[in-house]
Length: 489
Image (cartoon, rainbow, N blue to C red):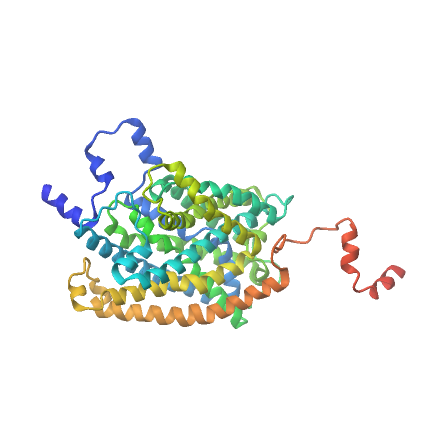
């Protein structure tokens, strides 16, 4: 047994958790470990799966209406595989970095390893800076999207306040995530999160099937190239949820088990996203083009309210997921990361939340912002940089021989891996960043032209028969010519 333990240490680092395994636990530590300190394979699986789908579930039918049914399904399967592949690359690079560092006797006890540090350790500081820039911007906008989604959803339960006011309120609520120290502490949350998205996905499916097809429903997609690529990049964004992969992996006690987890999580996610998006699209067809949030079209019912509330709680959790790595980066930047006191660290983290809050109020375009972030940021952060990093890390034959993990046979060892990586880089650059970036920017600018920045209530239905306040007279003033006729008759 002793010799095994030594080997284990060399591979994955000996953690505090491993050392306390032998000691008897009292009730309090048991309870706390159940709800709070997660590090098992299952925890990582829950974290991955619940982090994959959140508000994206609600925008996928919108993507389907842009892509058409067949393309939609194919793109989901294709990007699901691509995503799992790059997550596998990230996990290999992580284990490689960690093993190299631990051979030099570095201790990671109070330190959370992040993606940019892996790049730094394996490839030097220029890679680190590029990785850090993309990763932070992506997580920043990821958090912004969660906030917008909160406001967009709650509006379907309570429309007394407009969406902008809701964004203020939720910004304040989400600021409380500064008190959660690291990913070990998301155990109960990610489990609940997964239950919530599962419920919502099946609610969307069943409700659409019971509702049946609208009268005269049209399924004309794909019609325009712009819309086609916007839809495709939203799907790219869906399966690009693993910018936090390294942090989740670091929260595991045996990180080298991570590889298969991501694939299984993705397969589970596909069982949620495919039926729900297909059913909603089948029922409503082209109406979805103007409704990026699927809740908007389904009839109001207690089930829908439950789904909305669950999604809200889930978005809160995902906000934490996207923000926690940002907090880590910020703590490292000002040198507070190894600090033991939780209160100090929480206070220090507050400046991170404020820009997120501001951006969510400036750009409340719930569907289009996903695609824009997907094409400009996710494409690099999650697909291109890991693939290139893998190619460059194992460029020399000595690095390949000493690799902690050899690539599997079924891929074709190093040559196969290299070919797949090259394909990922080229495909994502051209389709994801090139066409996708062009399409989603065009769409985004169109939203700004239509609704304006700081818009009060994005894509809200106009109120029915409003009383005539003086504002409306001013609004119609530019065209006085037509009005006398109407009143005259």
